[in-house]
Amino acid sequence: MDITALTFNERDEFKRKSIAEKAISLLQAEIDISPMVIDGSWGTGKTEFCHKLINLMHEQESHHLIYIDAFKADHANEPLMTVLAEVIKVLPEDESKQSFVKKALPAVRYGLKTIAKAGVSHLLRQDAADVVDDFDKQIQQAADKTIDATVESILKDHVEAEKNLKALQEAMAEIAAKKPIVLFVDELDRCRPNFAVDMLEIIKHTFDVDGVQFVLVTNTQQLKASINHCYGAAVDAQRYLDKFIKFRFELSDRSDRNSHNPVLAARQHFFSLAKEKKSLPDDMLKSPAFGKAIEHLIKHHTLSLREIETLVLHIEISQALSNNKKFPENQFLGYTLLRLIGIMLVCFKPDLISDLKKGKWDANELGKFLGVDSLPSLLQEGHRKRPEAFDVMMVMIARDCNRNVDTYIPEESQLDEWNNYIYRGFMGGAPDQNEAMNQILETINEMSFE
Image 1 (cartoon, one colour):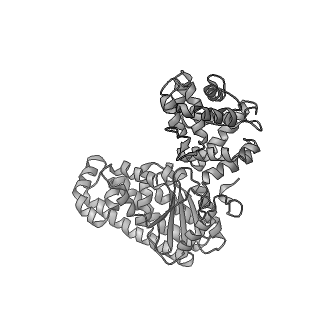
Image 2: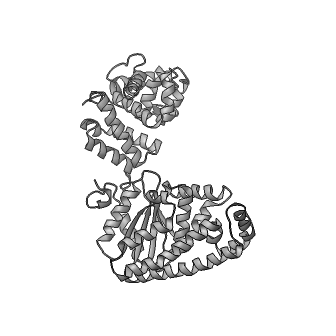
Image 3: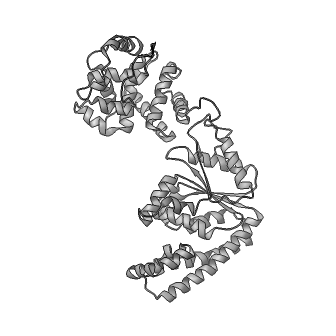
Protein backbone atom coordinates (compact mmCIF):
# COMPACT_ATOMS: atom_id res chain seq x y z
CA MET A 1 0.00 0.00 0.00
CA ASP A 2 1.24 3.47 -0.92
CA ILE A 3 1.54 5.18 2.46
CA THR A 4 1.53 8.65 0.86
CA ALA A 5 -2.00 8.05 -0.46
CA LEU A 6 -3.50 6.83 2.82
CA THR A 7 -6.49 8.64 4.32
CA PHE A 8 -8.24 8.43 7.65
CA ASN A 9 -11.34 7.16 5.85
CA GLU A 10 -9.41 4.13 4.63
CA ARG A 11 -7.69 3.33 7.90
CA ASP A 12 -7.97 4.98 11.29
CA GLU A 13 -7.64 2.10 13.74
CA PHE A 14 -5.93 4.38 16.27
CA LYS A 15 -8.66 7.04 16.01
CA ARG A 16 -6.29 9.86 15.18
CA LYS A 17 -8.44 11.78 12.73
CA SER A 18 -9.63 14.10 15.50
CA ILE A 19 -5.99 14.83 16.37
CA ALA A 20 -5.26 15.73 12.75
CA GLU A 21 -8.30 18.01 12.64
CA LYS A 22 -7.02 19.89 15.68
CA ALA A 23 -3.58 20.28 14.09
CA ILE A 24 -5.17 21.61 10.89
CA SER A 25 -7.23 24.11 12.88
CA LEU A 26 -4.04 25.50 14.39
CA LEU A 27 -2.27 25.66 11.03
CA GLN A 28 -5.20 27.58 9.56
CA ALA A 29 -5.60 29.92 12.55
CA GLU A 30 -3.92 33.30 12.76
CA ILE A 31 -1.57 32.08 15.47
CA ASP A 32 2.19 31.84 15.19
CA ILE A 33 2.76 28.17 16.03
CA SER A 34 5.50 27.45 13.50
CA PRO A 35 7.54 25.36 13.75
CA MET A 36 5.07 22.89 15.20
CA VAL A 37 6.32 19.46 16.22
CA ILE A 38 4.43 16.19 15.94
CA ASP A 39 6.38 14.28 18.57
CA GLY A 40 6.62 10.57 19.12
CA SER A 41 9.10 7.85 19.85
CA TRP A 42 10.41 5.40 17.28
CA GLY A 43 7.68 3.36 15.60
CA THR A 44 4.62 5.24 16.85
CA GLY A 45 3.19 5.76 13.35
CA LYS A 46 4.27 9.38 12.91
CA THR A 47 4.94 9.13 9.16
CA GLU A 48 1.61 7.48 8.38
CA PHE A 49 -0.18 10.07 10.51
CA CYS A 50 1.65 12.87 8.69
CA HIS A 51 0.58 11.66 5.25
CA LYS A 52 -3.02 11.20 6.40
CA LEU A 53 -2.98 14.72 7.86
CA ILE A 54 -1.64 16.13 4.58
CA ASN A 55 -4.28 14.29 2.55
CA LEU A 56 -7.01 15.51 4.88
CA MET A 57 -5.76 19.08 4.53
CA HIS A 58 -5.51 18.70 0.74
CA GLU A 59 -9.30 18.38 0.61
CA GLN A 60 -9.62 22.03 1.65
CA GLU A 61 -7.17 23.31 -1.00
CA SER A 62 -6.20 26.18 1.30
CA HIS A 63 -2.41 25.75 1.36
CA HIS A 64 0.57 24.61 -0.63
CA LEU A 65 1.41 21.38 1.21
CA ILE A 66 4.97 20.12 0.91
CA TYR A 67 6.35 16.87 2.33
CA ILE A 68 10.10 16.51 2.89
CA ASP A 69 11.76 13.25 3.90
CA ALA A 70 14.81 14.72 5.63
CA PHE A 71 16.49 11.34 5.95
CA LYS A 72 16.51 10.83 2.18
CA ALA A 73 18.09 14.27 1.73
CA ASP A 74 20.66 13.75 4.48
CA HIS A 75 23.35 12.58 2.05
CA ALA A 76 23.24 15.89 0.16
CA ASN A 77 24.19 17.75 3.35
CA GLU A 78 22.46 20.96 2.22
CA PRO A 79 19.15 21.48 4.06
CA LEU A 80 18.59 24.88 2.47
CA MET A 81 18.71 23.41 -1.03
CA THR A 82 16.52 20.50 0.10
CA VAL A 83 13.75 22.83 1.27
CA LEU A 84 13.97 25.19 -1.73
CA ALA A 85 13.88 22.31 -4.22
CA GLU A 86 10.59 21.11 -2.73
CA VAL A 87 9.13 24.63 -2.73
CA ILE A 88 9.99 25.02 -6.41
CA LYS A 89 8.12 21.78 -7.23
CA VAL A 90 4.77 23.21 -6.13
CA LEU A 91 5.07 26.46 -8.11
CA PRO A 92 3.28 26.78 -11.44
CA GLU A 93 5.37 26.68 -14.60
CA ASP A 94 5.30 30.40 -15.32
CA GLU A 95 7.32 33.56 -14.83
CA SER A 96 6.80 33.52 -11.06
CA LYS A 97 8.63 30.22 -10.81
CA GLN A 98 11.58 31.49 -12.84
CA SER A 99 11.64 34.69 -10.79
CA PHE A 100 11.73 32.73 -7.56
CA VAL A 101 14.59 30.53 -8.78
CA LYS A 102 16.63 33.61 -9.76
CA LYS A 103 16.15 35.12 -6.32
CA ALA A 104 16.83 31.84 -4.50
CA LEU A 105 20.09 30.92 -6.22
CA PRO A 106 22.20 33.87 -4.97
CA ALA A 107 21.10 33.20 -1.40
CA VAL A 108 22.07 29.55 -1.72
CA ARG A 109 25.35 30.43 -3.43
CA TYR A 110 26.42 32.94 -0.78
CA GLY A 111 25.21 30.72 2.03
CA LEU A 112 27.34 27.82 0.79
CA LYS A 113 30.33 30.05 0.06
CA THR A 114 30.37 31.55 3.54
CA ILE A 115 30.01 28.20 5.30
CA ALA A 116 32.59 26.43 3.17
CA LYS A 117 35.09 29.28 3.21
CA ALA A 118 34.97 30.29 6.84
CA GLY A 119 33.71 27.30 8.72
CA VAL A 120 31.87 29.64 11.07
CA SER A 121 28.25 28.72 10.39
CA HIS A 122 27.63 28.31 14.10
CA LEU A 123 28.82 31.88 14.71
CA LEU A 124 26.76 33.42 11.93
CA ARG A 125 23.56 31.64 12.97
CA GLN A 126 23.57 32.67 16.60
CA ASP A 127 21.55 35.47 18.08
CA ALA A 128 23.27 38.88 18.17
CA ALA A 129 24.08 38.70 21.88
CA ASP A 130 25.70 35.32 21.45
CA VAL A 131 27.78 36.59 18.54
CA VAL A 132 29.27 39.38 20.66
CA ASP A 133 30.20 36.93 23.42
CA ASP A 134 31.74 34.30 21.18
CA PHE A 135 33.15 36.37 18.31
CA ASP A 136 36.84 36.24 19.24
CA LYS A 137 36.80 32.60 20.22
CA GLN A 138 34.91 31.40 17.14
CA ILE A 139 37.04 33.35 14.70
CA GLN A 140 40.20 32.00 16.32
CA GLN A 141 38.91 28.41 16.15
CA ALA A 142 37.91 28.81 12.53
CA ALA A 143 41.24 30.41 11.69
CA ASP A 144 43.08 27.38 13.02
CA LYS A 145 41.14 25.13 10.65
CA THR A 146 39.73 26.42 7.41
CA ILE A 147 39.78 30.19 7.03
CA ASP A 148 41.76 31.18 3.95
CA ALA A 149 40.78 34.84 3.99
CA THR A 150 40.78 37.75 6.37
CA VAL A 151 38.07 38.44 8.93
CA GLU A 152 37.08 41.43 6.83
CA SER A 153 36.36 39.26 3.78
CA ILE A 154 34.34 36.85 5.89
CA LEU A 155 32.14 39.62 7.18
CA LYS A 156 31.70 41.04 3.67
CA ASP A 157 30.48 37.66 2.53
CA HIS A 158 28.11 37.58 5.45
CA VAL A 159 26.69 41.00 4.56
CA GLU A 160 26.20 39.87 0.96
CA ALA A 161 24.55 36.67 2.12
CA GLU A 162 22.19 38.65 4.34
CA LYS A 163 21.20 40.86 1.39
CA ASN A 164 20.41 37.84 -0.77
CA LEU A 165 18.67 36.11 2.13
CA LYS A 166 16.31 39.08 2.38
CA ALA A 167 15.59 38.79 -1.34
CA LEU A 168 14.79 35.08 -0.90
CA GLN A 169 12.46 35.79 2.01
CA GLU A 170 10.65 38.44 -0.01
CA ALA A 171 10.21 35.95 -2.84
CA MET A 172 8.80 33.36 -0.42
CA ALA A 173 6.44 35.96 1.05
CA GLU A 174 5.10 36.78 -2.45
CA ILE A 175 4.25 33.12 -3.04
CA ALA A 176 2.72 32.66 0.41
CA ALA A 177 0.58 35.78 -0.01
CA LYS A 178 -1.24 34.05 -2.87
CA LYS A 179 -1.43 30.67 -1.14
CA PRO A 180 0.13 29.93 2.26
CA ILE A 181 2.76 27.21 2.48
CA VAL A 182 3.04 24.39 5.03
CA LEU A 183 6.19 22.28 4.89
CA PHE A 184 6.16 18.93 6.70
CA VAL A 185 9.71 17.81 7.53
CA ASP A 186 9.72 14.12 8.45
CA GLU A 187 12.40 11.72 9.75
CA LEU A 188 14.61 14.47 11.17
CA ASP A 189 15.41 12.22 14.12
CA ARG A 190 17.00 9.65 11.77
CA CYS A 191 19.41 12.15 10.20
CA ARG A 192 23.04 12.73 11.08
CA PRO A 193 23.25 15.16 14.01
CA ASN A 194 24.89 17.94 11.96
CA PHE A 195 22.25 17.79 9.25
CA ALA A 196 19.38 17.74 11.77
CA VAL A 197 20.73 20.79 13.63
CA ASP A 198 21.47 22.62 10.36
CA MET A 199 17.89 22.01 9.24
CA LEU A 200 16.54 23.49 12.48
CA GLU A 201 18.69 26.57 12.12
CA ILE A 202 17.88 27.04 8.42
CA ILE A 203 14.16 26.93 9.29
CA LYS A 204 14.57 29.55 12.02
CA HIS A 205 16.90 31.97 10.27
CA THR A 206 15.93 31.59 6.61
CA PHE A 207 12.23 30.75 6.54
CA ASP A 208 10.83 33.03 9.20
CA VAL A 209 8.38 34.39 6.62
CA ASP A 210 4.70 35.32 6.87
CA GLY A 211 2.54 32.61 5.38
CA VAL A 212 5.24 29.92 5.61
CA GLN A 213 4.82 27.29 8.32
CA PHE A 214 6.83 24.23 9.24
CA VAL A 215 5.65 21.01 10.86
CA LEU A 216 8.47 18.80 12.14
CA VAL A 217 7.55 15.13 12.45
CA THR A 218 10.18 13.78 14.79
CA ASN A 219 11.28 12.47 18.16
CA THR A 220 12.40 15.45 20.23
CA GLN A 221 14.47 13.23 22.53
CA GLN A 222 16.60 12.22 19.56
CA LEU A 223 16.81 15.84 18.41
CA LYS A 224 18.19 16.82 21.80
CA ALA A 225 20.79 14.09 21.48
CA SER A 226 21.77 15.52 18.08
CA ILE A 227 22.16 19.00 19.61
CA ASN A 228 24.43 17.65 22.33
CA HIS A 229 26.43 15.74 19.74
CA CYS A 230 27.06 18.95 17.79
CA TYR A 231 27.61 21.41 20.63
CA GLY A 232 28.65 19.22 23.56
CA ALA A 233 26.99 17.74 26.61
CA ALA A 234 27.33 21.03 28.50
CA VAL A 235 24.71 22.66 26.23
CA ASP A 236 21.17 22.59 27.62
CA ALA A 237 19.57 20.84 24.65
CA GLN A 238 16.02 21.53 25.81
CA ARG A 239 16.61 25.29 26.09
CA TYR A 240 18.35 25.26 22.72
CA LEU A 241 15.40 23.41 21.17
CA ASP A 242 12.94 25.82 22.78
CA LYS A 243 14.48 28.58 20.60
CA PHE A 244 13.22 26.78 17.51
CA ILE A 245 9.94 25.12 18.45
CA LYS A 246 6.76 27.11 19.09
CA PHE A 247 4.33 24.27 19.77
CA ARG A 248 4.50 20.49 20.07
CA PHE A 249 2.09 17.66 20.69
CA GLU A 250 2.76 13.99 21.18
CA LEU A 251 0.95 11.18 19.42
CA SER A 252 -0.89 9.21 22.07
CA ASP A 253 -0.21 5.50 22.54
CA ARG A 254 -3.95 5.05 23.16
CA SER A 255 -6.39 4.25 20.40
CA ASP A 256 -9.48 4.98 22.52
CA ARG A 257 -8.60 8.07 24.52
CA ASN A 258 -12.11 9.01 25.68
CA SER A 259 -12.91 5.72 27.36
CA HIS A 260 -12.66 5.09 31.10
CA ASN A 261 -10.67 2.00 30.10
CA PRO A 262 -8.42 3.27 27.29
CA VAL A 263 -7.15 0.79 24.72
CA LEU A 264 -3.46 0.59 23.88
CA ALA A 265 -2.89 1.35 20.21
CA ALA A 266 -0.09 -1.24 20.16
CA ARG A 267 -2.41 -3.92 21.57
CA GLN A 268 -5.03 -3.17 18.96
CA HIS A 269 -2.37 -3.16 16.25
CA PHE A 270 -1.16 -6.61 17.35
CA PHE A 271 -4.58 -8.22 17.12
CA SER A 272 -5.47 -6.48 13.86
CA LEU A 273 -2.22 -7.60 12.24
CA ALA A 274 -2.34 -11.14 13.66
CA LYS A 275 -5.87 -11.53 12.30
CA GLU A 276 -4.95 -10.03 8.92
CA LYS A 277 -1.85 -12.24 8.57
CA LYS A 278 -3.64 -15.30 10.01
CA SER A 279 -0.58 -15.92 12.15
CA LEU A 280 -2.61 -17.03 15.19
CA PRO A 281 -5.83 -19.10 15.40
CA ASP A 282 -9.09 -17.23 15.83
CA ASP A 283 -9.94 -18.87 19.15
CA MET A 284 -6.67 -17.59 20.62
CA LEU A 285 -7.22 -14.07 19.30
CA LYS A 286 -10.66 -14.05 20.91
CA SER A 287 -9.41 -15.37 24.26
CA PRO A 288 -9.63 -12.72 27.04
CA ALA A 289 -6.79 -14.45 28.92
CA PHE A 290 -4.51 -14.33 25.89
CA GLY A 291 -5.47 -10.70 25.23
CA LYS A 292 -4.60 -9.75 28.80
CA ALA A 293 -1.26 -11.58 28.53
CA ILE A 294 -0.39 -9.75 25.30
CA GLU A 295 -1.28 -6.40 26.84
CA HIS A 296 0.97 -7.16 29.79
CA LEU A 297 3.94 -7.86 27.49
CA ILE A 298 3.29 -4.76 25.39
CA LYS A 299 3.17 -2.53 28.46
CA HIS A 300 6.19 -4.15 30.10
CA HIS A 301 8.36 -3.79 26.98
CA THR A 302 6.68 -0.52 25.88
CA LEU A 303 6.42 -1.95 22.37
CA SER A 304 5.94 0.59 19.58
CA LEU A 305 3.69 0.03 16.59
CA ARG A 306 6.75 -0.82 14.50
CA GLU A 307 7.96 -3.32 17.11
CA ILE A 308 4.50 -4.90 17.06
CA GLU A 309 4.89 -5.36 13.29
CA THR A 310 8.30 -6.95 13.91
CA LEU A 311 6.79 -9.32 16.48
CA VAL A 312 3.92 -10.40 14.21
CA LEU A 313 6.39 -10.93 11.36
CA HIS A 314 8.45 -13.22 13.62
CA ILE A 315 5.31 -15.14 14.57
CA GLU A 316 4.73 -15.69 10.84
CA ILE A 317 8.36 -16.78 10.40
CA SER A 318 8.03 -19.18 13.32
CA GLN A 319 4.90 -20.68 11.81
CA ALA A 320 6.51 -21.07 8.40
CA LEU A 321 9.59 -22.79 9.85
CA SER A 322 7.43 -25.20 11.87
CA ASN A 323 5.13 -25.99 8.93
CA ASN A 324 2.25 -24.19 10.66
CA LYS A 325 1.99 -26.81 13.40
CA LYS A 326 2.85 -24.87 16.52
CA PHE A 327 -0.24 -22.67 17.02
CA PRO A 328 -3.12 -25.08 16.42
CA GLU A 329 -6.75 -24.39 17.27
CA ASN A 330 -7.83 -25.11 20.86
CA GLN A 331 -4.26 -25.26 22.18
CA PHE A 332 -3.83 -24.77 25.91
CA LEU A 333 -2.79 -21.24 26.80
CA GLY A 334 0.44 -22.35 28.45
CA TYR A 335 1.89 -23.87 25.27
CA THR A 336 0.95 -20.78 23.27
CA LEU A 337 2.60 -18.44 25.77
CA LEU A 338 5.76 -20.56 25.99
CA ARG A 339 6.12 -20.43 22.23
CA LEU A 340 5.41 -16.69 22.24
CA ILE A 341 8.12 -16.20 24.88
CA GLY A 342 10.61 -17.96 22.59
CA ILE A 343 9.63 -15.74 19.65
CA MET A 344 9.90 -12.56 21.73
CA LEU A 345 13.34 -13.59 22.96
CA VAL A 346 14.45 -13.94 19.33
CA CYS A 347 12.97 -10.51 18.56
CA PHE A 348 14.02 -8.47 21.54
CA LYS A 349 16.54 -10.30 23.77
CA PRO A 350 19.11 -12.22 21.68
CA ASP A 351 21.80 -11.79 24.37
CA LEU A 352 19.71 -13.85 26.81
CA ILE A 353 19.30 -16.60 24.20
CA SER A 354 23.04 -17.26 24.25
CA ASP A 355 22.93 -18.08 27.98
CA LEU A 356 19.84 -20.26 27.60
CA LYS A 357 21.51 -22.33 24.90
CA LYS A 358 24.51 -22.84 27.20
CA GLY A 359 22.23 -24.22 29.91
CA LYS A 360 22.33 -21.07 32.07
CA TRP A 361 18.67 -20.94 32.96
CA ASP A 362 18.33 -17.93 35.26
CA ALA A 363 14.84 -17.43 36.69
CA ASN A 364 15.51 -13.79 37.63
CA GLU A 365 16.57 -12.88 34.08
CA LEU A 366 13.50 -14.58 32.59
CA GLY A 367 11.31 -12.96 35.24
CA LYS A 368 12.65 -9.52 34.29
CA PHE A 369 11.97 -10.24 30.64
CA LEU A 370 8.39 -11.27 31.40
CA GLY A 371 7.76 -8.46 33.88
CA VAL A 372 7.34 -10.72 36.92
CA ASP A 373 9.59 -9.71 39.80
CA SER A 374 7.81 -11.74 42.51
CA LEU A 375 4.85 -14.03 43.05
CA PRO A 376 1.59 -12.66 44.44
CA SER A 377 -0.16 -14.30 47.34
CA LEU A 378 -3.25 -16.20 46.20
CA LEU A 379 -5.01 -15.35 49.45
CA GLN A 380 -5.49 -11.63 50.13
CA GLU A 381 -7.76 -10.19 52.83
CA GLY A 382 -9.58 -13.47 53.12
CA HIS A 383 -10.33 -13.72 49.40
CA ARG A 384 -8.84 -15.93 46.71
CA LYS A 385 -6.88 -13.96 44.13
CA ARG A 386 -6.47 -15.32 40.64
CA PRO A 387 -2.86 -14.97 39.44
CA GLU A 388 -1.97 -13.30 36.16
CA ALA A 389 -0.92 -15.48 33.22
CA PHE A 390 2.80 -14.77 33.47
CA ASP A 391 2.79 -15.32 37.25
CA VAL A 392 1.69 -18.88 36.51
CA MET A 393 4.20 -19.23 33.68
CA MET A 394 7.05 -18.09 35.93
CA VAL A 395 6.23 -20.72 38.57
CA MET A 396 6.47 -23.38 35.88
CA ILE A 397 9.56 -21.89 34.17
CA ALA A 398 11.41 -21.42 37.48
CA ARG A 399 11.04 -25.13 38.26
CA ASP A 400 13.17 -25.83 35.20
CA CYS A 401 15.77 -23.15 35.96
CA ASN A 402 19.09 -23.80 37.68
CA ARG A 403 19.77 -20.24 38.89
CA ASN A 404 17.98 -17.75 41.16
CA VAL A 405 14.78 -19.75 41.52
CA ASP A 406 13.87 -18.85 45.14
CA THR A 407 11.83 -15.77 44.18
CA TYR A 408 9.41 -17.93 42.20
CA ILE A 409 8.86 -20.83 44.60
CA PRO A 410 5.25 -20.69 45.90
CA GLU A 411 4.48 -20.88 49.60
CA GLU A 412 3.91 -24.46 50.69
CA SER A 413 0.36 -23.65 51.78
CA GLN A 414 -0.50 -22.40 48.27
CA LEU A 415 1.43 -24.95 46.21
CA ASP A 416 -1.62 -27.04 45.37
CA GLU A 417 -3.47 -24.00 44.06
CA TRP A 418 -0.55 -22.96 41.84
CA ASN A 419 -0.35 -26.51 40.50
CA ASN A 420 -4.06 -26.48 39.83
CA TYR A 421 -3.66 -23.39 37.63
CA ILE A 422 -0.74 -24.98 35.79
CA TYR A 423 -2.21 -28.45 35.30
CA ARG A 424 -5.83 -27.59 34.54
CA GLY A 425 -5.80 -24.04 33.23
CA PHE A 426 -2.54 -23.68 31.33
CA MET A 427 -1.05 -27.04 30.31
CA GLY A 428 -3.91 -29.53 30.39
CA GLY A 429 -1.96 -31.81 32.71
CA ALA A 430 1.24 -32.05 34.69
CA PRO A 431 4.11 -30.85 32.50
CA ASP A 432 7.12 -33.12 31.99
CA GLN A 433 10.44 -32.26 33.58
CA ASN A 434 12.00 -29.22 31.86
CA GLU A 435 8.99 -29.02 29.52
CA ALA A 436 8.63 -25.24 29.88
CA MET A 437 12.25 -24.48 29.01
CA ASN A 438 12.31 -27.15 26.31
CA GLN A 439 9.28 -25.54 24.63
CA ILE A 440 10.97 -22.13 24.70
CA LEU A 441 14.28 -23.50 23.39
CA GLU A 442 12.57 -25.55 20.70
CA THR A 443 10.98 -22.37 19.37
CA ILE A 444 14.30 -20.51 19.49
CA ASN A 445 16.14 -23.35 17.72
CA GLU A 446 13.51 -23.61 14.98
CA MET A 447 14.03 -19.93 14.21
CA SER A 448 17.82 -20.19 14.31
CA PHE A 449 19.90 -20.38 11.15
CA GLU A 450 23.02 -21.64 12.89
